[in-house]
Image (cartoon, rainbow, N blue to C red):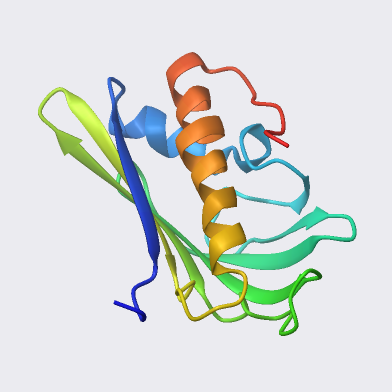
Length: 147
């Protein structure tokens, strides 16, 4: 199990297209400063929390209502020894219709328990995905930072 990437999921009473739209609105749920485009294949964007976290993502897959993949091109996580642990990992959002509901399965491929940042990063993803992103999907309202 030590090689298992971090994953979490939830189900909402919204359509796959509504979930897809919310995920692509990264500024609406991923707390911190985001520069660049977050909604087209090939686009690159940077995420930054000063003195804590920097990462640069490239959107490698966008299948409307079904899937979004961000490839982490660069990373600098200041609170760990190997500040580039996220580099060359993939952040994946799988969207699946389940009856009259939609399931969002989030996986940070390559963020594994052996990483020094796993505990803090998985806790952060849990707050952001299960908290902010879920609330954005349910309410349509932009979400403030959970910390």
